Every structure is written in C-alpha cells, then in structure tokens.
Image (tube, rainbow, N blue to C red; front, top):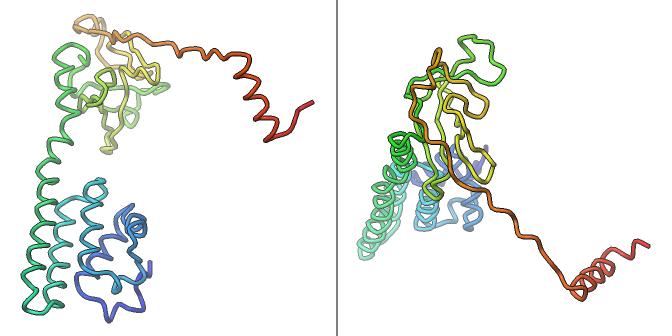
Length: 248
C-alpha cells in the first residue's frame, strides 16, 4: 500500500513488522490513525506509541494477541537499541507491563470466545436446540443437491441475552453460517424443531417427533405509545416549522 515507502531505508525492524501487520489486518490502520500514529511516517512515532496501538487492537479483537505480542517484542528491541544504557531498564519495564496486558487478554480469550458455545451446549441439553450435530439442513428453496446441504456444526447463544440462540451450520466448502431459533429483537420464535429460519432438517419420516423440543417462551413487549400534551405537540410543531417552514 506504500505506507512509509520513502522512509523504509531508515525505518527500524520493529516499525517494519508493525507496518506489515497493520496493513495486512483489517481495522488496524484506521485505529492507528485515530490514536495519532501516521502510517506514512512511522519513524516519527515512538515504540511505546506503536505498542499502545497493538494493545488497543487486541482489546478490540482486531488481531490475535499472539501476533500483537510478536510485534511488541520487536518494538521493545527497537526501544532498547535506541535507549542509552542507563535507561534501558525503563524500556524493559514498560515492555513487561505491555506484555502482561497482552498475556491477560490472551488468557481470557478462550473463555470469552467459547462462552456462546458453552451456553448453546446447555440449551441443547435443555431441549431448546435439540437437533444433533451433523444433521443435514436444506436451505429454503433447496433442490436437494449436495452443494445445497449444510450440516449443523454447533450450538450458539448470546451471552448477553439468553433468549437469542440458534445453530451454527457448515457447508461442504467449510463456509460457516448461523440460523436463529429464538431472537426477540428479530421476532424469531421457531415452533417446530425441524424447521429453522426456513431451513429443513433431514430427519426422515416422523423424525421430529422423536425430539424433545422446548420452544422459545419469551413474550414480545409492546412499545409504549407516546402521549403528548397539546402544549408539547404545539412546541414540537413550532420547532419543525422554524427549521423547515410552515407546510401551509
């Protein structure tokens, strides 16, 4: 992309590694610019500033923490090479502090990423997601061709809303999609275990009758109607007319 092309011969290894990872990872270039790091002048940013970009990228899940840690290691070497001997220990301490942050996010990541599936597994045991892993699913309008068929590959739920859950399905080409069984926001509330968002489960004759299915039981809440006094409505009408003119 040409970032820093004119200054590459004077750019340190750590900055070159940072540039390669940032340009090759969606969202990091934009994040760096927001944090005041100019991608076409990386030599003007300190290693500490670039480390901070990597830290933010990890927290925003733009990059694998292990890749970010590799960048930080090279940036730390830059700082150590540039620092006088009497301040090198400060650079070490700063690197250790940043490394601890990355390590903490890395340790938390498996739990955070697996939580939707762990909740989904629990819903499977409760009969809310009863279709077995490996069940063939035919899309709406599918003709039964092999390329049309997906298989259920996981159970998934929203950790922040227990009423949002469904199946993860995978194609023959390993394309992964999600089909919802329950979602109050979208009005999804499947009544049959073998029909999910228009997808048909290949269970054979009376196959669905063998499933112990617990349909979603949430209730849609009506949006409260706004009631305004005549004075409030007149004030709103007047403000509208002041902005856009009286339609009459």
